[in-house]
Length: 486
Image 1 (tube, rainbow, N blue to C red):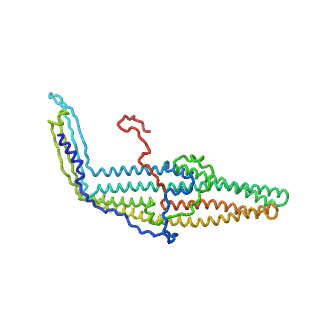
Image 2: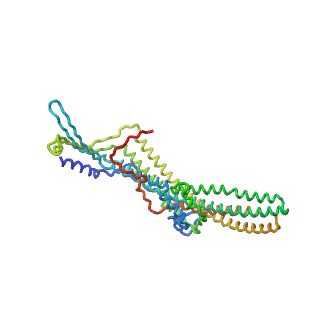
Image 3: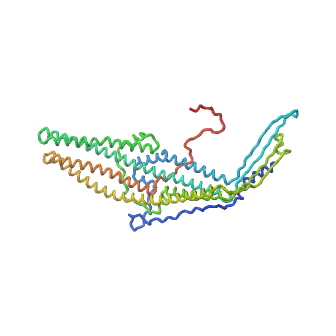
């Protein structure tokens, strides 16, 4: 009896070695993609590889570095991506289990009494095994699809990191820019108040008309009225940064309240060559893995058109006592194949194959579209960055000129050699261009951030994905108190 049990168990373990490696459906091949040899703005010299790993470190801003570190650990989108990886990994393992036989054990005990014959005891024990021979690779294609699905989720996590880090840096740049604009506005209001006081003194002395006084006071109030809107925008950037790091909206108030300058864009920016995108951009790798997965699904669906063969076996023994189960008992066993041939299902199986092929086409088109979008994003960000540099340099010169004009106009106005209108015009132009210069510095930094995102720059450190977000306690057999559901 023991020998029979061991033989059946051994058979269940060694059956996979008998399986055929035949599979139906198309075999996936990485698509060849023709990409431009260089970017539109590149010179004929060989392009230097883009420096994408932790690109934000080049700003030399410890506060930003710390925010990104917190976000990698606490951002909810990153945590969601890690949970999806764990789910995909479990699905892959689950799909792999279908390649192996199923072995179950069973047993029962029954005590009965019939008439005057007294009581009797019946004990049974047995093993059952079944295995579907994967003759045409349905299960193999299922495992293949699950493997590609796991790859896609792993790449998706990296894509989430690219987006999240870009959002952190962009909102940080906006916040520092708003701090600078608030400080500029407050300085301008202070200066305009002094001008208004001087204007009132000259009005009281009868040197100027009330029109100049009204303009001076009106300009001061108008400039001061912009501060609440700037502070509102600052609060929104602060709240966004806090949430991106996985914290309450006001958690970073103390960390960011100290004013710091907008980080400067590196003077030299490298973009590599367009072909690098296929390796550097995780969203393109996600699209490619989805295309691979949909190709494997075709074979899985097509295998259903072919016959399937299963092997089943069982062995059981019965006796009146436990000791009888090994000897002196009734033993029965069975082993044999079963064949299932699809004859007519109203075209459902062929339709399933057609649907899988259409899904594969969609995945390929999405991959092709993602590549073109990536090329477009790099080109746009590169052009915007280069043109913004020119705009920023011109605005710097304008600020210098308007600052000199304002100094001269104020000196002439204080000496009574010019009208208030000249000073008013100079102050307005200076304030407007100084504000534009701050915003251009922010926009220049955001163009740089967009270029790094478009090139696929992101986190290159280790991300632990095995740890579950919720840690369960003991989940084995235990009493459960019935609760009333509201």
